[in-house]
Length: 251
Image (tube, rainbow, N blue to C red; front, side, top):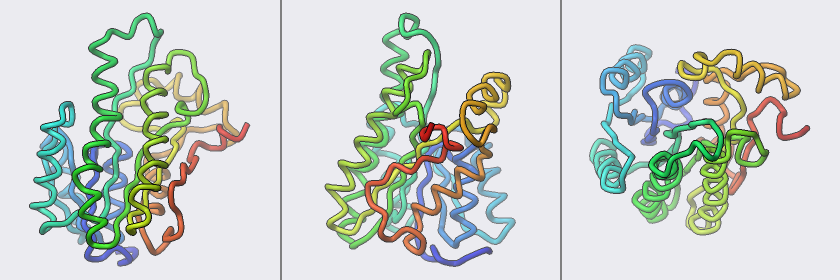
């Protein structure tokens, strides 16, 4: 393993069966964390777990349906069970990102986006942050987007949900920070994953607007998440919204 700075820590990553989530799970395991790979697809989840274990890491798959509060609370309880009664790191990565005109966004889609992108992180934090605070430490990393701070045509619904997550990041830092729980977010730019690669032209067009001029890899985003999750690298970082967007929010 590259580092053992997170040895003994239990890390729960939502949406961890592919893309940024799986890259984050693998990177956390490289630092010695026991990673709980959360998602709906058990086959893909077990593939991620197997890949981690083959490299000498520790991981378990935990099934999760975050579309309603009961499922969120169940995930928290299952994670605590697998983690020996503790979760030290929570990465709120799961989300959906439908793009399109505001007038085409049906109410059912609006509700689904805010349920997964806002309500699920809210209630996972409600379930897990108090335990972190009681133990005197923990780290929460929320995965946001540059669309939360810049106006993009067709991204009103998605961007608004992540703007809420940005505010929650700061509010939770104020609420739980005094008891040792660090809460931060990564503000992600266009990233090549299994899903976004299906719209390569749109991905390249968006990425071209930033100084970097290219999409990020999932591993590049994961590196930033792990930086914020690891006390060894970010112990004095609290309530930060870290742009990892190739410079897009700077221009």
